[in-house]
Amino acid sequence: MTMTLPFSPTRPVAPLAGPTLSPSVNAWVAEMRDLLQPDEVHWCSGTAAEFDQLTKQMVREGSLIRLNPEWRPNSFLARSDPRDVARSEESTFICSRRPEDAGVTNNWRAPATMKAKLTELFRGSMRGRTMYVVPFSMGPLGSSLSKLGVQITDSPYAVISMQIMTRMGAEAVRQLGPDTEWVAALHSVGSPLVDDAGVRREDVAWPCSDTKYIAHFPETREIWSYGSGYGGNSLLGKKCFALRIASVIARDEGWLAEHMLIIKATSPEGVTRHLAAAFPSACGKTNFAMLQPTLPGWKVETIGDDIAWLRPDDDGRLRAINPERGFFGVAPGTGEATNPTAVATIWGNTIFTNVALAEDGDVWWEGLTDRAPKGLVDWEGNPWTAGEPATAAHPNGRFTVPAEQCPSIADEWNDPKGVVIDAILFGGRRATNIPLVCEATDWEHGVFLGATLASEQTAAAEGHVGTLRYDPFAMLPFCGYDMGDYWQHWLQMGERLGEHAPRIFQVNWFRKGADGSFLWPGYGENSRVLDWIMRRLNGEVGTVASPAGGLPKRAEFALAGLDLPTAAWDELFRIDPAAWLRESEQTAEFFDRVGATVPKALRLRLTLLRWDLVSRL
Ligand code: TSX
Ligand code: MN
Image: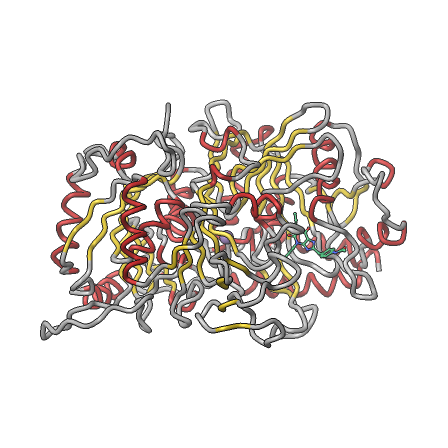
């Protein structure tokens, strides 16, 4: 199977893009056109010519700035409305018929009530604008693990971003047969250019609305997003489809839609393994997905940096694809020192959002280089000088770039069969208690580790230092159904996979010593942790049993060439029973909050852990 990408010079000219062979798609598009009342309808072809035409139009209209092509060819800067800079979780809803199906960790609304309200908001919301129809595939085209969607949007920013982030356009249309299942994804920035009286008004660079709804209808597989142009709210293939809706489809069909990166690791001996890993935000997930090993002879290649769809194959092994086609990464903190691979990836064909503009027509953000260049314009378009209290780039500023440009991309990233997952990692940002690495004693313990994944609050954040912010499986804002039911589904997947189940590990790069400094150097040195995990899979090294799980033996861990004092090693793996008992009380409170659907097996695990800890006091 061949697939031509929009930026390939050999890509053919636009083939037929629509209307499709799917009567349900054609009917929905017609119905939405009547509701939204756009001036024009544009079926997206997904070609390089279309990307070029749209970006030129947006530059003309002032909603994009073309970067200096000498430094950043075919690349653009978008500045959002300052009130539209992140996903709006308080406006995100799961609209299942029964509130219990959404669970207490989601905002719930009745589907009929939400649809009635949103229908009135959407009515005429595209007046004076173009309605873009964006057919897309999440996952390699034609893969049995992939799913199709059609997004309707009035945001050209969403269109060009979807072109980078998904397999979008004519190739996706070709996958849409008369009976093909697809997800309807409706999006409007909620800023019509013609009012009810027919009076036209000027557009702005980043139209949006103060009224925002990111509504999911898991039972009918629909997404209705109103009022925001921001990535997670407007690129509906990503969090809305590939996580919230897909997690429900996955539960119904017996697979997993997860907030996980996927990497391929090859040892000096030539042993290759594929790993999936879930990390809450601000843990450096993209950095880990593009890790450059410091251990000689090791190679880590990237398959995905955010989302994994995992499904048992005919041989009973768990196979994974990355449903995305690009990276929508946080820019600040991405630099030569932290992630040189990402820096190389964004050489061109990249959309930057809410970062600073340099005098030479290139972009800049905190962490790209040690010192800021002179003559910067900040993310809001104002002159900026180093030392100002505010940052030049918004902390949630982003780059959107095709995955194929990543120097470490693995050959298999586009393989319709996916890759067999050998290990699953869970990692939080924990200054205390959690060791650098440990192995779950079995699948059920691994599910317990995923369910209790948490990050520690820093002094700056609200709440007390040491208070845990639970983010189970890094899925708290992304699970489309009840959290307890989701854990139960994970337990059932383990039973089904049996001896073929991947092994589960917990990692923590962020443990601190008594003086408050990081004990582990992190970044490329995390290859030492990968080395140990791979040796565990090979059966080459043992473990020391602990309340956390199986810990490495110091003599069997690759420490050569690393100046890690024995005291730091001991502290990285120290289990303080009293501190763990206090933590287990927070865990019990969290389980109580999730409620009656917490699987008995996980409650029992917690009880047994607490008995074990008491005996160690
Ligand atoms: O991404 C990170 N990773 C994973 C890399 C593959 N970060 C950045 C997190 C914020 C997004 C890390 N920060 C990591 C890490 O492994 N570790 C740390 C903590 C740390 C920071 C600085 C140092 C050491 C550890 N500096 C020195 O030791 C000199
Ligand atoms: Mn994410």
